[in-house]
Image (cartoon, rainbow, N blue to C red; front, top):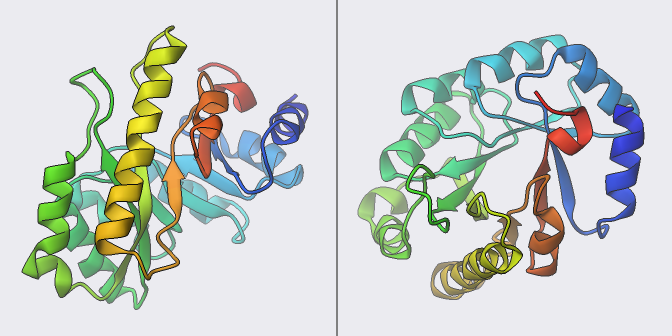
Length: 219
């Protein structure tokens, strides 16, 4: 079933959009089934769970951290994580830089923005992001690479509201790109869209969709 779900989703998304299979809470056996259908990119939201799965599973898997991160958990991921989607503070980015340096790596990250109406969602405002990117501290980081932005829409049945929020993230991406990364090709990712809204996200410019339940079934 997992392989069939992946093929179905893949057939409906453009080649240039990366499918991140959200495997949080799922056993290694389910991830392996997805992997055997050619899926190589998986998203987790807990650092220690991801580290355990990394140890058990094939080493050509790309692991993405998509959940809210506490700075003290970065050390568990730093040796292997491919991309951290959820950077929302200078403290967190500083710790990622520190742990990347210890592991002799450059870690790719996305800045997470708060675009939803729900207060429970995490993320920067545009003003906070600009302050971070203009800070002396950030200018001294050599072991992180900011590759784009991430956001989560409101959990809503109203497609127009979701579309408006994704459009807002695309506009933030453009603004940040023009102001800070205009000559950096690596700044190109817009991570938005989950099982319920990824089609709208792709229409609004997403380059990465994070899909869990449509692949692995509900919890």
